[in-house]
Image 1 (cartoon, rainbow, N blue to C red):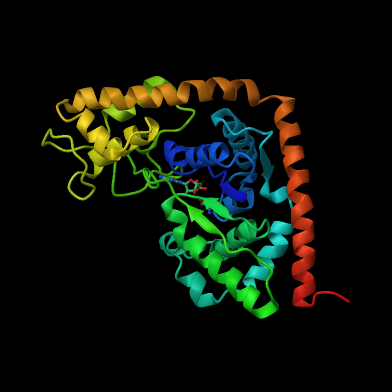
Image 2: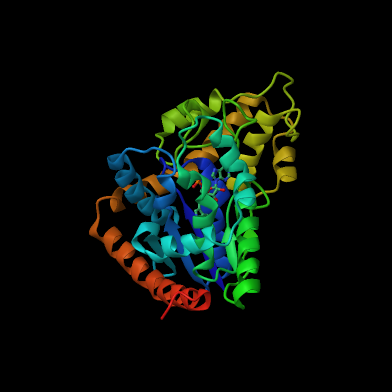
Length: 328
Ligand code: AMP
Ligand code: TRP
């Protein structure tokens, strides 16, 4: 079994990233302990939108340290920078020569961002090609991602099948792996939108690095409603349902169990408990992070990850080039 995923270093990681992605990595690490894991920092994806180069460099290191601080075990998981394994971009070009313009134009993430300006980067358009390459390069069986990535994953499967059909069986068809609870954590200030590290208002998200005092403030000021009843209904009560989801996920309970637990609580009592469970999750992560961020060990882990990933990627790209006819 091979498991592959990545996160863009376009800012610091949020609680949404933790619940939607990292928590799945940790579950899979336990569940499939004999599998090979490739969890990378999707740094090439981060430059699809403008980002200061110093900030990018800082974010890359921070994400690497955060992966390990959250509990990814470098003995079981290969952690590396996407940009350090050049085959990702090589295969991305092959994917550009496999996908159709119409398919890329239908991608929601592209359509959403494209509305902001006309000077969006070309790489934002071809983003799904690189993502498909990231996955297919390693013959991933399972790709743990939040639900915002479902469409990209579906396109990846389409491209793999198309390539296999045109050139003979080359790629495994990957399956997505979503958490049952929390595959889309919403903004605390506008719970119709997903929680994202690129949002302007820092009140809308919780960063894994946030100090606990500001976590408390953000939870207390999170938008809810006025009817003072605690139950799950994403349409009628999006803010409250989002907090229920966060609690359920972090406490490893179902939404039903969580609803029951807080049935007779006030919003204040409920928010207190949500804050506490977030604090319990973040405290050990932040402690471990501090010991890692400036350590040499972090570089050793990334070097090893790069080496292991390259071994597989080099063979795969050779096979692909051969099949396409890029040879003499
Ligand atoms: P990104 O930060 O966009 O690179 O996302 C990295 C991973 O985190 C992907 O698997 C996303 O689906 C997941 N993710 C990002 N934001 C959220 C969110 N608000 N809720 C759940 N998962 C998320
Ligand atoms: N596109 C993903 C996101 O924005 C990040 C990503 C890039 C990814 N390549 C990937 C996730 C490959 C899984 C597998 O969240």
